[in-house]
Amino acid sequence: MDWQNDNSEHARIWNSAVGKIVKALDKTDLQTATRVFSYDLHWFFNKIPFDEHMFNWFFLAWLIPCFMKENEPLIRWYIKHHGRNLTKEEAEVLFGARESIFGVFNVKSQIESELKLVDTSGKTFFVDTINLETIKTGTAVIARLNSKGNGKYFAPGPIIPFEDNTLFIKMKNHRKFRDSWSDYLVGFFKYLVSEENLSEKTADKHTENVNLLMFFLETELEVDSFSKVTKTMLKTDFKKYVKRYILGAPDIDKVYYSLFKFFDYLEEEREIKNEEALNWLQARI
Image (cartoon, rainbow, N blue to C red; front, side, top):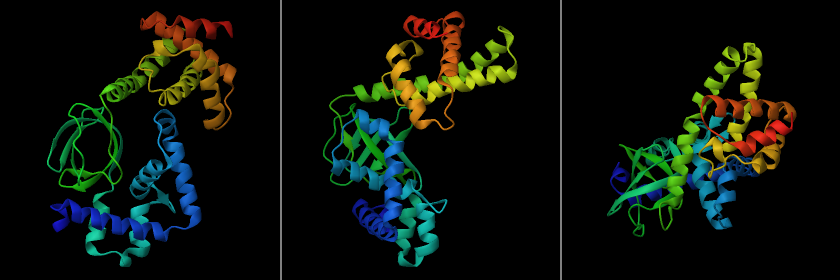
C-alpha cells in the first residue's frame, strides 16, 4: 500500500479508477448526475461564481463518492458490476474515499504536503496535497474532501483559496443558526398547544409550514438570525422556492398564516423582533 504514504501515487491510482468508472456510465447517467449535482449545489454556485472548467472539476469530484446508480452508491455499483477491471490498489483507494465533505474551511496550517483545515462545525481535517501553492493561514478555502484512510483526506478537485476568512465566518454563523432551528420548532409547537390551546394536529401543521421556511433559509447564507428575514424574502424569494422545490403545492396563504404565528411567537416568547416580517405577514391575514 505505497499509495498511503505517496501522495502522487495515490493521485495516479485515483485518477485511473475514476477514468474507468466514468467510461462505464452512459449518456443518460451523466445527464442525470449533472442535474442532481446542479440541484444539490445550485444555491452555492449562484452565490459563488465558477467558470465551466471549475464547475466540471467539482462535478467529477462529487460524482464518484456521491452519485447513486440503480439505488446503490456509484463506487459500490461499479465494483459489483465491473470490479474485475480494477486493480487491487484502485479498489482500496475507491473504498477509502466513500466519505465526502464539501464546504468552506478555515486554513490552520500548511506543512510541506499536508494542509490542516477546520470546517464550520469545528472538525479538523488533515489533507494530503500535491504541489499545492502556499495558502495564507487563517483564510478560507472551498474544497471537496474525500477520506483516504488513517484519518487523512485528499481533495479530488481544486482547493480554492480566498483572500480572507469572511466567507468562513459567514458560513459558520449560518451553520450555528441552522443548528438552532430544531429548538425553535419544538418550542413553537409546544407554545401553540399550551398557550393557544390548539390541537396537536393543528400545531403540527403550523410547524410543518414553518419548516418550509427553514428549508428556504438553508440557502440564504447571509441570514444568521430570524430577525434578518426580510419582506422581500417572504413575498418573492420564499414563494418562488416553495413553488419550484416543494412537492404537493402547499397553500401559500396558509403557510404565510403559520409564519405570522411563528414570528409572533419569536417576538413574544423568544425576544426576537422582526417588525418588517411580522407586519407584512399580519397584513395578509
